Image 1 (tube, rainbow, N blue to C red):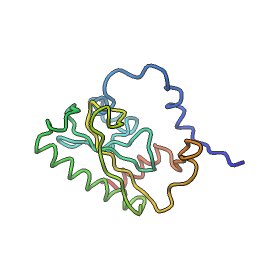
Image 2 (cartoon, rainbow, N blue to C red):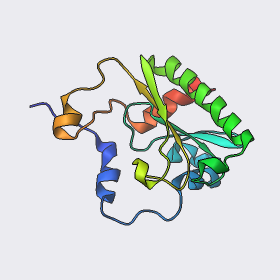
Image 3 (cartoon, rainbow, N blue to C red):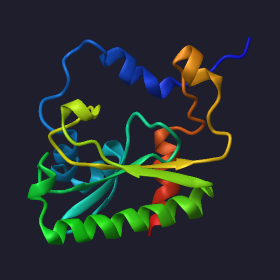
Image 4 (cartoon, helix red, strand yellow):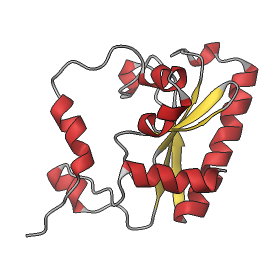
Length: 163
């Protein structure tokens, strides 16, 4: 039997069914001191938008690009926010290509609770690197996804390629 060891998932498993921290994790990452950027997985903060690692990634390098302003209403986004978000999506894809050499990407967003998004109050674009053959039977039959790199290592890797 092969054992899948993913200790960083314990924080998620131990939170299931329990009370979550108050407020928006994206806003909290923006508001806290830059010394906590790694802990908050905040990769980059611009003038109107930011890039943050997904704490519960689908694949290694799963990033989110978000407006800094807290809004869940896509139609409220200002042209300047949309422009910076677009620039950061492009920079994110470039950094991910340099760091991990993926074969492709899924890029998108979920709008509203009915769309399936877990956070519907703060818009965020998902950027998920994909590799040919990165899907297998585990997610389908066992509900398990293997992420081969810890979030801390992913943060350090992408930080090097981001700058």
